[in-house]
Image (cartoon, rainbow, N blue to C red; front, side):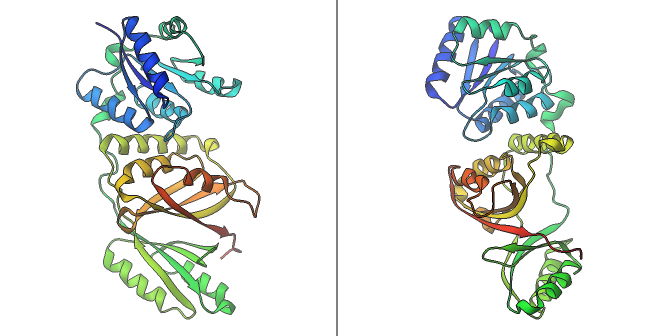
Length: 328
């Protein structure tokens, strides 16, 4: 039986050449243009009882870079041999890839015989590399245990700014209260056991002297396919377990206007941007709100904002930098 190879590369010519060349060498190939389609394909193949014997992935892709895919796939499929290919690698990137078990690295350009040699140098996957501990059947994050909503607030009495901040910060039901620079003065995250309690908190906030509530946006559960949801959860756990991989710097809230018809693709792509700390869906899937970090110098356009603006389906990105307040 031919060895099955899953190829991930965003360049059509490379996908065609690799598929044709490996087929000539006796392999059975499936090629995907991005990380999300590859996640679907890998999960579907496991459900069919087929699986893949090898994965070949580029590093730089439009939605999820290959190193993130490698992190998750090695968490879920530790026995699957992976060959990382890139035309823009360096020693540190190579070392990072090779630090994963049963993983190879190959610089572009290369010939098909070199590719075959690199694949055969990896240990074969047993029975198509089944998921570890039956993880493919699990569906994480099915139920939300609490209700959440974001409030954006303008302070109409600046002389009361610190007093207002302290009052809201300590108000029951307020999970976080951040002072920001931008179109608003405060961003409040409310959490409670019911929507009724969120509404009651909203009324209490509105009644505070010197406060104008600009918006109340309930947090919605993103409509994601099961395998994408699982992929994100595994990645979050991997990043949490390795805090040194998290970006550090100035924190900001972001509000991202999106094409709601492409919510899954956009939500997934934004989630996997290194600087994104967390991300929520609001306004019927038309907006995302979250927090990012960036080390860009003050007064210059944030690199992460530029990065988010280039994602297909992102219509506008607004940033509100968090102001560090004194101990409250």
